[in-house]
Image 1 (cartoon, helix red, strand yellow):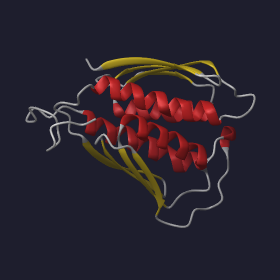
Image 2 (cartoon, helix red, strand yellow):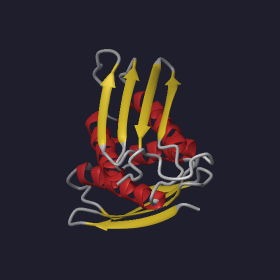
Image 3 (cartoon, one colour):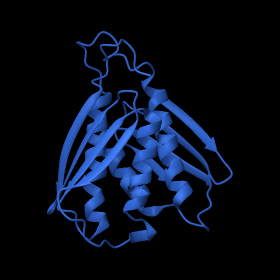
Length: 200
């Protein structure tokens, strides 16, 4: 079982994440940010990841910025720890998920080089902000996750909806599915999935 846990404590937050990559999609998430908790439940369910998130301290009285970004950092680190030397993994994964008129396309490459790119197929409409969450926070979360895991993460959203929930829900579902594909073991792959022989 590829499992890991990590606690990250700073002056702003104290976050613990427990992960089983080869799980069944069970989650227990309490970040203090209700909207993000719901998105991560979807991510874990569709990725078949067992995920537990506990936030002991957070400066939510100021805003959600640090908790949101720090959770992305810890999630990236715990996935990297659980994957170890990455021997045998597919490394690459992609998935498209629709929700009403919105379609999210997510492609990942666990290459050791962390990068994140978000694009839109159409002009971005003005969006509502449920639970004080907005698109910029999602971008900060994904960027932190990608950089800490060492993953190229490209997201494209077609027909983004003014309802942020309807726009981001298929993104988190597609992200879970794409990362599940990328982290699965290919029995034909006998070593590190890189012609260099190593993924940092």
